[in-house]
Amino acid sequence: MSRVHVSVRSSLLPLTWVLLVLAIGASPRVAKAHDYWLSATPSTPQADEEITLRMWVGEAMKAQAERPFAPDRTVRFVHASSGGDVVDVDAEEGVPVWSGRLEGGGHLFGMHRGPAFIELPGAEFERYLSHEALTSVIDARRERGESAMPGKERYQRYLKLWLPVGEATGSTHGLDLGFAYELVLLDPPSAGDVRVEARFRGAPLVGAPLTLVRGDAVARAPQRTDERGQILLSDLSPGTWLVRGVHMVRSEQAGVDWDSFWAAFTFEVPSRDVVAPAPSPAPPQPVAPGGGCAGCGLHPTRPSNGLGAWLVTLLALWVRRTGTRPCPGRATS
Image 1 (cartoon, rainbow, N blue to C red):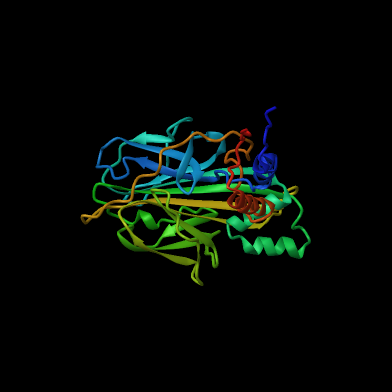
Image 2 (cartoon, rainbow, N blue to C red):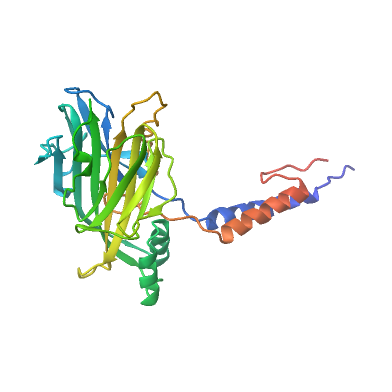
């Protein structure tokens, strides 16, 4: 009579699957798209060339979806030419947000998207605050015993785009459009160094966390503004760049805990030397299904070490010792 031998390793396969499922279930969620920014095509047009302005949502200039111009959500949409005059943009609802032709010089577009509301569970809100380096808000919630409480937030967005058309003349890059939270370029965008000033309600904002992102979605480590409300963007190569940040204050609105102000400034560093330009922003990819706050997707959550990471490590050690893989096997005689 033949005998069937069952490998001890095969009998442990169910344990492998249990550990794998637990590890996946315990793993933190991946960050969701939350940034908005403006872009222009072409990014360095010539005078009287057709230009298209688009608005994107994504993470670190990795576009996941295009957003239409929405008059009911837009408080202001303005344009300043090299002459310095700021005028309202004549835009129609839909995509792109604007298209047309411009005279030569430096041009600045600015858009204020009106307030929207979101409520996040306490732990998720804390991860979002940590992701955006909003340590003062984390401290304020802890002092009030609110760390585990849901975060009720009203947010607004302030988007700017500086575009060189032909020979970039004028000083539009440094215009203050009067936004509640605004980023202002103190130097003309050029290869090398550019100073940026963060202003909240017209005054320089000290200690504001700002992040610089290249057009190929390479983000630098966040910097905090100095005592003048400024940071230095160094070693800029020709191409598209984005500087962005979030500022949050305690809200005076009933039913709202915090007011947040999101600023994003896209600018083009013109090519003047024979230097390889930074690539253009990545094309949009389909947005993963799931819920999100109205108009921006879920606020980001930062992965953290915990049970999931411990289980993955344990599983890797067990596989190394047994020589098996976490996949179904069959006993052999």
